Image 1 (cartoon, rainbow, N blue to C red):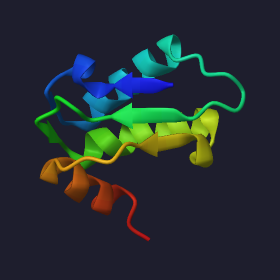
Image 2: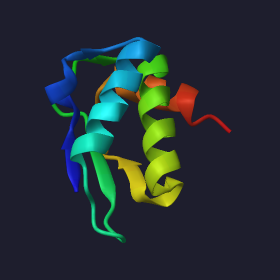
Image 3: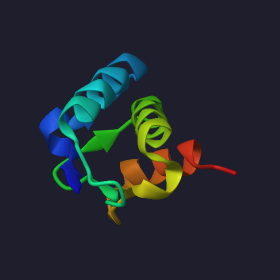
Image 4: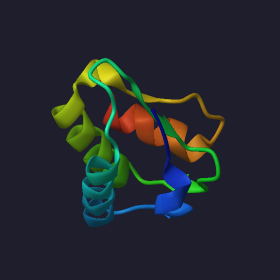
Length: 88
């Protein structure tokens, strides 16, 4: 199941906004038991690490780490935020 993040805005920043987006996603995203949730950043200009952390943590807690993936992107903002959020 693909989730187009542009419907939450072109500039995705702040932890409270990420929390609100995650709650909205969980209310509308109803994947099958084995279906992967794909986060699509196409059309998003900028993503802050706090926003992304809130969304990923919430969705992964609900559906499992293996089922929530970020689709490949060339957006430098997304790439850098993912490095911060998913750093080992």
